[in-house]
Image (cartoon, rainbow, N blue to C red; front, side, top):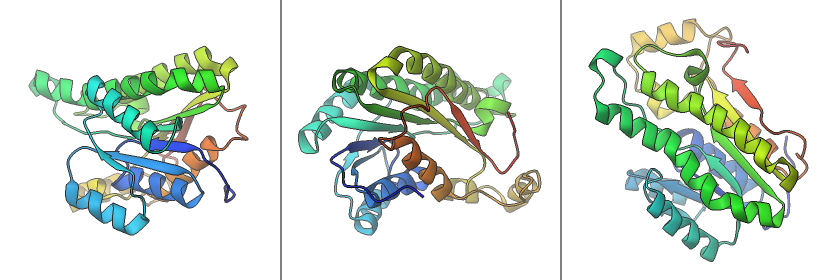
Length: 247
């Protein structure tokens, strides 16, 4: 377990008010980080998150829009201080077989799931290099590594995160900045629970541990990677999937 720390470190978590992102935000807050949680659309969920966690630094903007990201990173740094930890968690699905997929379905997923990683990383990495400290942790997916029917857009974006992170890790390794990826399998979130019960039963049956994962398990690994002492872990992809995909 990551220790309780006294820190002035600022952590930005995109898609940070629901699902995996909410667990990450809450745990980092518990461990003493100043957390800025971002979201795009669900105001009701964001307000419930704020009340439950006590995290007041909640920001609504589109992570696929570079100019919006620039505006809000500047606002976050004015409110909380320089960004030390970035967790790229925001993601959407627009599933369809490729022969039926529209350009809009492709572009929406690529923009939100992959372009956002560039947008936010680009905006914070210069400051991290100058201060010689930074942690960039991006959430990929089991389907970005193994592929999935009906998810060429999603799998391409999530696989792209891995290549992006390895390359960036090499660029900033000598500057005290680490860059890592977590690739969750099927996690017990509202999104997964919304899947038809029959289909969900078949999904769980393919997981060797025979159950869905916990969002808290992803959050604990994020907190571990964000810690000041983790200076030798970079360019890595961590699979948390109950043994469903081993690499």
